[in-house]
Structures are given as C-alpha cells and as structure tokens.
Length: 233
Image 1: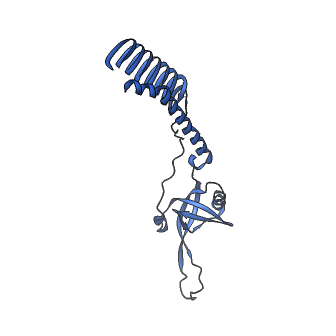
Image 2: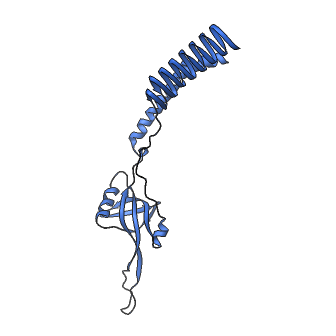
Image 3: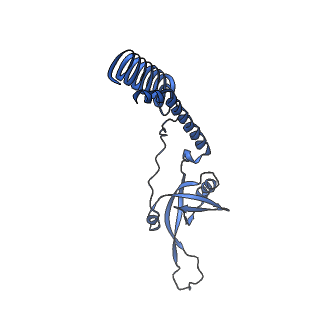
C-alpha cells in the first residue's frame, strides 16, 4: 500500500479519489479508519451516507455513536438518530436523607435506617442488613409499613429513636424499682425508589436492545469491517 495515492481508485495510507481506500480516505466512495465522502464507511466517518463506529452524516449508522439528519446508533445519538442502547438518564430524584448506624440509635441517637419489611399477620417484621430488628410502630407509620410489606418492593427508610419503658416482668418485689428496657420506635417511614433493574420489563427491553446492538455490529462487520481489514491487510 502506498503512503499517498490520488486517482480514480486510490489505495494508500492517505487516499484521495472517487473510490478511496486507506487509513485516511477521502472520495465519493471512501473506506478507511477515517473516511470522508458521499458514501463513507469505516471507523470515524463523515458522509452523506455514513456507516461506522462513530459517524456524522445525513443518513448515519453508527455502531457506537452517530450524528445525523436521520439514522441509528448503538449508544450515543444526536439529531433524528435512534439510539438502540441509550445512556441512562439522570432522573433528578430527591436525594435520600443521611443514614445513621443502628448502633448509634440503640445508644440513644435518632435517625434513618434502610430496612426491608415482611408481613407478620397484623404486625410487620423489620430486617436491617438481613438481621431482624424489633421496632415498635403505631398509627400511620404502621399502616404505611403494612402496605409496603405487602407490595412488590418492601424496601423503605425508617426514622427510629431509642426510648425507655418499663419492662414487663413478674419477678420484682413491691419495694424494688421496676426494671426498664430500651426499645426502638419508628416515628417515620419513607419508601425507597424502586430501581429499574428490579422490574422484569427492564431485562426484556435490555435484552432486545443488546440484541439490536449485536445485529448492528454484525452489519458493520460485513458491510465495512471485512473490506477495511482486507484493504489494510
């Protein structure tokens, strides 16, 4: 392969012609690692019809990214280009309150913890980091906890505080001071947002999108890759 070639059919590291093939190809039909032309194929491509990994064109087909009047891209897209597997969007969700270690709450502090709820008849079991925690709930907190425990996503934030109460025991004499015990009380509950990957629909759509990217990559390999490797080999 020549370093520099110009002609009707040009083959070189730098190729300029009606049909140009090379590392840098410029022509009506250009095939190269960097290709510019009316019909451009390669890796980094600019053309009216552009097929590449990253491309810009009126009709743009990019395995990874594309900018064009119309087209399709694997991931990044600008213009009227459909991204098969678009980057995740920031949903602008309200930030979660800071969490407090459970040990600090037991010692007398108050704060939020992550918890998973499980229904237990009229009561609700609380699990923190997979460990059961005894928590007292009343009123609207208990009602919300029951609803969350029976939902498909029983993960919540609980606002807990440590309280002291009289212990229930029959082994205390009438002259003895009644023993006390520390208990955890839930004063608030907030549902945790359900992540997309917890939904079966997410995996179905993601699987179809990945299949689309695989098909697009296969099309590039047969339409562009084989010819490009043969020309540069």
